[in-house]
Structure formats: structure tokens, C-alpha cells
Image: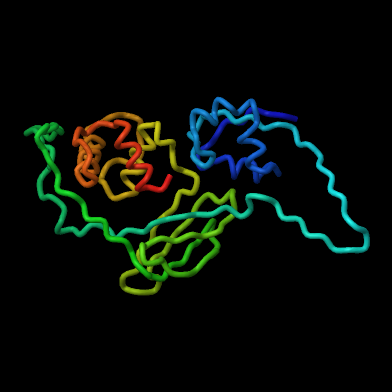
Length: 245
């Protein structure tokens, strides 16, 4: 029977379709999901609470010669994970004082003249990695010359760990909340992308708070945008470009 499914944390069209035996295109392009498609744009980035229509399955028949072996491959399986791994900022680069200013009572006060120094982006080049998904090692390899990795994984994967330089003193473990990115149109989506890119702010929440404004100014300064501390179209476009989604 058809259903209207409420998106949960970690869901995307690919995982919803995979778990129900559909091609992701069948669900994404269904007329009853046209409004969702227009609103979210990207089938892999939904927000908790979105409604996705799941249609009835339709039987498809294929003509095949008898007494022969035939191979069928389900489209969209596996999914691909693309990441760019950056070196963490050095502790010496962190400001000693609250860059936006603080009141005597400990509360946070915005400084409109604060102009943060650009953050240098340093990719993790040609470094060995191990990817664990839902408790299983699914891939081992090395980042490329730009710090990027491209890995195949099941569409319904939920939790992962990317271990950089495993077994060495420089080992670094990056937890992955697969499917957990919110749309760029949401404040929470802006927060998560900034946090992932190394611009310090709380990665959760839908409020335009001081920590978000400070991270936005730093990001805007670093990317030669108008430094406003606000979420504007140019900032969202650059964030999406830098984050990759």
C-alpha cells in the first residue's frame, strides 16, 4: 500500500528507496513528491519531519532466453560517499580571548567591527584511511592529492568512522553521521556545514545565535565575501560549493 513517510534523522531518498525495494528516482520523481523535490532540490539532503510519498510497487517484466544465465543489477546500489579531509586548525591559531567580546557577567556581546583572520585550509594529502560503517570495515585506501576520498557504501548506511593515518601517532578518527546533513535552506544546515568545514559554531539548532554569526563572519572573510555575519545567498552558495553538497 502507498504511504506518506515522515523523514527521520539520517534518512535520504536513496536510503528510503533502498529499504523499500525502489529505485531512488521512482520516489524522487513521483508527482506527489514534486513539492518536496522543489523545496529540497537534492534527494540526498532532507530534513527530519519532511513527508515523502511512497507509491505502490509496479511489476516489471523482462524477456530472457531460457537455459541461460542472466545478471540484473539494481540501479543506485551502492551509493557513493565523497569527502574532502582537512587538517584541524592549530591550537596556536586560536584566539586567547572571545573574538566578539564578552560582558563582565560572562554573557556574549557582538562586536560589529570584529574582522576575523582568514582560516588556512590545509587538505590531508595522500594519507592512508580506513572507513568503518555500522561496525564493519568497508574500505581502506588513501586520500588523493587534494585530500579527497570517494567510497562506495550501502544506501542505508547510518553511522560511520573515517580513521585517518590508522595505527600511527597521527591517527585521527572522524565520526560520520551518514545522511545527517540538513538542507542549506535551513539554519541547521548552515550550522552543520560551517562546523564540518572547521568554522567553530554549535552544529545543531535553528536559531541565529552569536556563535553562528561569528562563524559566518569568519567564513565570509576567508572566502572574500561581504562580512555581515548573516546568512545571505552568496554565503549559502559558497558554503554549498565548499562543502560539496
